[in-house]
Every structure is written in structure tokens, then in C-alpha cells.
Amino acid sequence: MGMSKIRFPETKNFINGKFELIGEHLMDVFSPLNGKIISTVPLSGRYELEKAVEAASIAFTSWSTTTIKERVQIFFKYRDLLQQHREELAEIVHIENGKMIGEAIAEVDKSIELTEFACSLPQLISGEIMEVSRGVECREERVPLGVVASISPFNFPNMVPNWTIPNAIALGNCMIFKPSEHVPLSVKRLAELLKEAGLPDGVFNVVNGAQEIVEAICDHPKIEAISFVGSTKVAKIVYKRATSSLKRCVALGGAKNHLLVLPDANMKMSASDIAASMSGCAGQRCMAASAMVGVGEIDHIVDQLCEEVRKIIPGDNLGSVISKEAKDRIERYITEAEKLGAKILVDGRNVTVKGKEGGYYVGPTVIDFVKPEMAIAKEEVFGPVLSIMRTDTLDEAIAIENSSNYGNAAAVFTQSGGLARYVMEKANAGMVGVNIGVPVPREPFSFGGWNESKFGVGDITGKTSIDFWTKIKKTTTKWNAEAKTNWMS
Ligand code: NAD
Picture 1 (spheres, protein in one colour):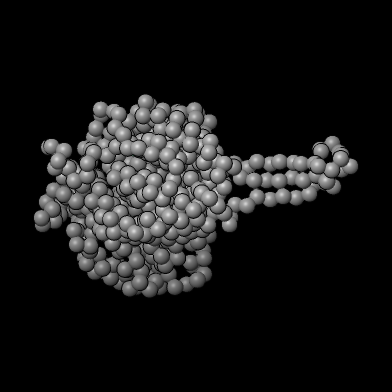
Picture 2 (cartoon, rainbow, N blue to C red; picture 1 turned 180 degrees about the horizontal axis):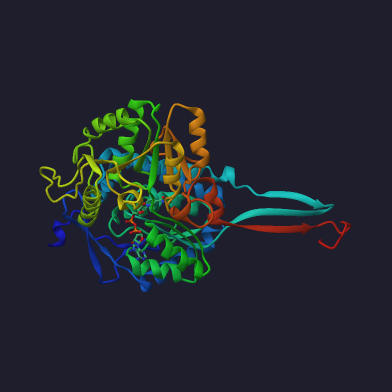
């Protein structure tokens, strides 16, 4: 295929304010909507990283000595640019990731909210000062770390990058960004908008690629901190490799989110919330409902849920999954569960969308009478599939939730405040919902799971991210010659 047929010209790295292509290894980028090639992406390695780190290190000298009030001015402009280009940015997400336009718009809106939080940082990070003994003062202030890196997954090409870009940079760091090689186009556009907003060259750099560039980032001695978002398998590799080369690291992994449904739950609200949670972004959200545990007599809710799920039509109000491999993997899980005796209530296998026959679509799928020991009940499926397990008691349901290796989100649907409170206390997950299928904390609250859904201290967004992207300088001063001296000062 000639370059002219490619919708987005070849994606390049962005180093020191310029797009450039050095490496010869290019990978094709496909749109999951129709399976067609839309761009190419360089698979960079140590050489490209070295150039990016050099640019970022030089930029850090001046960027770190501007005040935070000056730095956030750029993010006020960036926020307005995200708003102005909202539809265009959503269109890019839609094409490269396959989610519906409405979902892509919601993603861009979330990026705007994340940037607004960064704009408020001057109000949150002032230091402290205290006279600790007569004439002697201690003062604490936050300083940036230096060159930092951020690595993102395919499922939120616009929002996840904005989990880290505005906060890390507003706090004075210079960044090397590594987007998912499956969706490199959104971050390319963000680089252009950051430049247009006035960000100096070298403060934000993009290196594209896959495993090799990630390993180079983990090993690079001049990179101080790495944030990672992706699967648990890779999060573990990155966390171990980054910390063994003595870096700060927070690495978010995969998920298996449980929804506990009690018989007294509001039937209509629960059914529509659960349907939206399991199918939104084609089930490719780390906060998606994947396992539902029904306690006691909940057939009426399951019936209503299936009615809601049948209204979800691939290509109409359900996007595609990311690749042919993902579609095959999801369908394999369904078939295996069926073979083991689970009952398929709504079957999303073997769907095609008219006019988009090359697209990777899986229809919404509901499977009942799944057993906790089945693979589909334990592993991350990452598709629009809900497995329903049944228990007699709430404690059995909680035990199933608690036994998961993951711990991103958990939710309970009930009208009883006491039972909701009990689940809030017992759930073994970082983000808990009551009558909410996708309990994503909004700014200034922070986002992050527990167990194998996150490695490292603190969360990736909100208030706790301030600790991650800064270090604290403690200064003790004495200007008064008559000040009392003791063994400490
Ligand atoms: P992934 O782990 O395959 O890829 C994530 C990043 O790691 C990409 O940039 C990729 O290039 C890189 N990578 C892939 N294999 C690597 C290797 N062997 N060594 C080094 N780097 C490697 O994840 P994905 O498929 O892009 O994204 C989906 C996963 O991300 C799901 O598991 C989902 O739950 C998770 N996710 C988690 C959160 C969260 O907040 N916990 C948010 C979004 C996505």
C-alpha cells in the first residue's frame, strides 16, 4: 500500500519540539473499525530515547526554575485547545481505538477535567514553614524530580496520557511519553497542542515503540520516575525493572471487577447501570464490570439486564475491540465457559457489522451460572462480556470478590444502607461503588486500584500524584546570631 492511501501520514517521534523519523523499523497501525491500515509507527530503541532524554535534560534546567504559576498558564491554554478541538480529538480516538464517538467525546472531556486539576495545583502545593526553636526555621517545599517517563495502554488513547502529562509537567518535570503502539495518533496530536499552548521545546517528548523502548526507559540512568498503565503482566515487568534501576515507579495493571447484586436492588437502575458498565468502550475499560455475583433471588434483575443488553448493537451503540487477536481471545473465553456448563443468555460471538466486515466486533454477551473456578470468572477478558455467578449469602459473594488477584473496582447494588456499608468495608478493591457500575473517582480524588491492579505507592491522578511527581526539600535557617543553640541547630 502506498503512503498516499494512508489516512494519517506516518507517525513520528516528537523530540525537542520537532517531529522526526530516525529508525527504519516501522509498524502498521490499523483501525479496528474496519481493519484498514491508517498510519505507521516507528519502533524506537535506545538511540531515539537517548536523543529524547538529552532534549528533556536540557529543557529541565530552565523549565524547573519557572514558577508553577507561570507553568500552569500553559495548561490553561492547553485546556482551551482540548475544548476547541474536542470533536477532532474524539474522531482520532474513534478511528484508532474503535470506541464510539460519544465514548471518545467523554474521554476528551475527562482530559479537560484532568487539565483543570493541574491548573489548580498552585493552590494545593504551597510549602510549610515553622519556627522550630527560637530564631530557627524549618521550611518544606516541593521540587520537581527531573526527567520522567509515562507509558500508556491502548484503551484510552487521549485520557490516560492526560492522567500524567498535565500534573507531571505543571509540577516542573520534563517528560518522555511512550504511547501504545496500537494507538499513537492521539498523543501525536496532544504534542502539537502542547506546543501550540506555548510549552517550550524539550519539555514534552514522544518516543514511539513497544517492548524495546519500554525496557530502555526502565534502564535509563537519567530518568527519575516512570508511570505505567497497562496489563498486570507488563506492569510487573516494568515495576521490577524500573525499581531495580532505582527509579520511582507506579504501575497500574489489569482488572477483574465484581458487581454484587442483592435482591432488593432497584431493578431498572441496576440493570441499565450494569449493562452500561460491562459494554461501555466494548468492555475494554479497566473499570468495566466483568463478573456479577447475584445473591439469592435475582432472576428479575437478570431478565431486565438481558433486555437492556439486547438493545446494545455492534456498530450502532457498541464499538469494536482493538484487534483480531482480542476478538478471538474474548470468543474463546465464552466458548470455554459454555463447554464447562455455563449458560449463555446473550451471545455476542460471530457478529459482523454491515459495511464494516473487516472490523473487530464482539456483541454484548451475558453468561449465567458461571462457577468461580472457571477461567472466565478469574481472568481479565477485556471485552463486552458479563459472567454471572450465584450465591446464597452476601458473605459468599464477598469471598468471591476478595479471592481475586486483582483489586481495581468493586460495586454493590442494593437499597439497604447497612448492607452497602458492609460491602464498602469488606471489598478488597481500591475503588468501590454503591449503586454505581463504574466507580471512577473524579478530581481531586485519585485513581488507583489495589493488589495486582497497581504496584507502587500512591495513585496516578489527583492529590496523591503530587507526591509521586515531586520530592520535598527541607531547609533549616538561622539568621539570628543570638538564637538559642542546642544539639540540633
Ligand atoms: P499492555 O500491557 O499490553 O501494554 C501497555 C504498554 O506496555 C504499551 O505501551 C506497550 O507498548 C507496552 N508493552 C507491551 N508489552 C510489553 C513488554 N513485554 N515489555 C515492555 N513493555 C510492553 O496493555 P494494553 O493491552 O495496551 O492495555 C490493556 C490493559 O491495560 C488491560 O489489562 C487493562 O486493564 C489495563 N489498564 C489498566 C488501567 C488501570 O487504571 N489500572 C487503565 C487502563 C488500562
